[in-house]
Length: 111
Image (tube, rainbow, N blue to C red; front, side):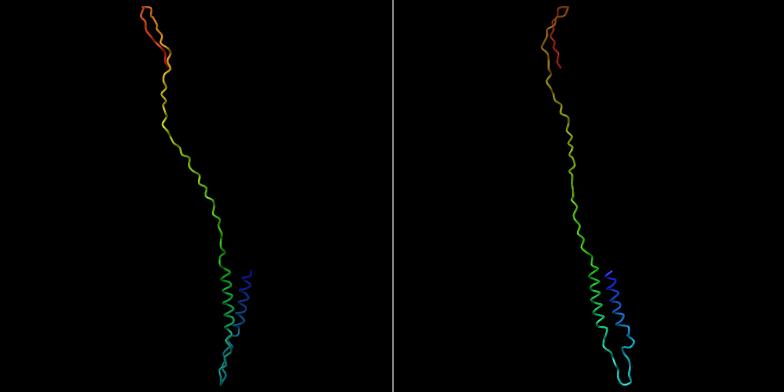
């Protein structure tokens, strides 16, 4: 709203300064009468107003907070070959067994 009022007031000043442009230079029979240069003041005021408007339109700085980066490590899966454990067999004591025909042999059980 302030910019609009500023522009409106500057246009009204510039409009009134140049409203009588047709009557500035006129001819008299013996002399040429030239009025003052009334365009200098509106030019300076317009330049100042333009600078104010141009500075008002500069973008405001935008501050962006960096987002935290969370990096989760991937689980490491190591596949190992199955380990085969060789156990020593557990065996019972030797037994001597005699068959009906009289032969003797030895045996034991292991697991």
